[in-house]
Length: 118
Image (tube, rainbow, N blue to C red; front, side):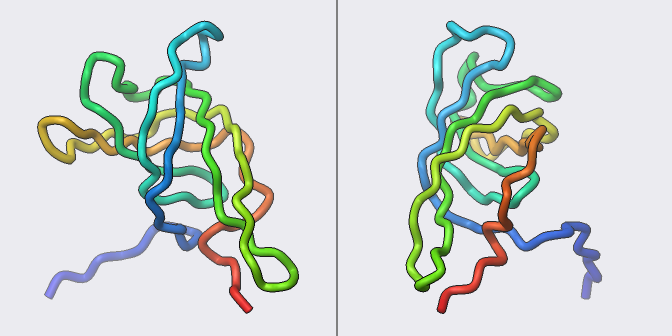
């Protein structure tokens, strides 16, 4: 049996929700769609098309997405987030999809995967 060491400092929230991203360098750059895979306070992973506009390693992006955020009364609201991010990993899912891992320049003010539902 293989012994795998978990290096993550924080539990990820896994969910399938739209994410929109564009290159940070060009304000007029086309905003492209993706699908969120998981998110933590410090970064996220999403899938996107492997076409020519696919992000590349070390690229700076601006990502726009929503994250469920627990409310004091126990319900959840979707909180809109915009974060400047750096691409830190790209995985090939298949011929048409890539999984892009990004690290936020500014962390989220809460830990999405560690919220308690009441």
